[in-house]
Amino acid sequence: MKQLRWPVENAATTRNAVSHQAANQQAEAVNGGKAPQLEVVLRGGMGNQLFQWAFGEFVKQHLPVEVVFDSSIVNLGGIHWGEQLSQWLPNVNVADLHKRPITALMSKPKWSIARYYQWFYPRWETLRFSTPQQAIKRIAKGKNARVADPCFYTQEMPKHPEIAHILSESLLNLHYIDEPHTALHIRRGDYFQQWERAILPSAYYELAANKFPKDLPLWIVSDDKEFAESVAVQLREMGMDAKVVAGPDHFYDLTVLATANALLLSTSSYSWWGAYIAQTVKGAEVYYPQPWSPVANFWDKLTENIGWPLPGWIGVPREEIG
Image (cartoon, rainbow, N blue to C red; front, side, top):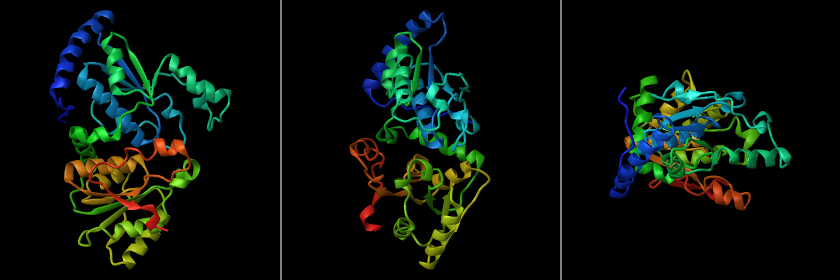
């Protein structure tokens, strides 16, 4: 498989690359002739892990660093599928490094001494909420870096279409889909446990899907097949050729989203990646709930609704849903 790399886009980046090359030679000298190592802690489901993977890819573009994705926490089990990257992406180094904070063993740590420990202790050994530039700066000094909860802003992704093409090619190698279609993603299952207010009603899907071109079939993917079937029935009554599709695995569902001519998102990073790939590779039309999630407090406003929609995406106002 052809491996695509992140582009060097401007003169400033080129100058940085030269300085990073010199710094990396110093780093190798400090580390006994070995390239420095970047550990990226995997957390969450596939959508979150893809952002963590993109973080590592960006750092590799700037420095020849060994990137290891630590599955210590994500493979503990729970509502997600565990480590996802090595199952379908090329040249991914995943290892269980057995570096688990004590609160990773707790299902729902509260604001307590344990939560305090989880927040502050890892900072002694780990870059938390780090940008790629911060990791690059540390590695260029000859130091290894470990990153948890990396910040890779969504608005940066359109500047790096190679990432979308890597993901598209990898998905199509698993499940080849070439039939024109539109797509709708319904996320519900685990949200009942974690984020219930982000669950969207059937009225949202019916309102938004009605904006799709009627000459293409509408494929619905969901983790709640019963609810998805009820939405499909309503859409067929509206004259749409809608059906719930179920492939052999969740990679098939992502392929359905990533190959769509138009798609409707749920409030989900999994949805987001399908839309990013489809828009970048195929020029797909993307609809999303606006705002991205209901705002419960100031922190939500600060973190959940800034930056998720990409340029060209079309918002469906939540007030229209009723």
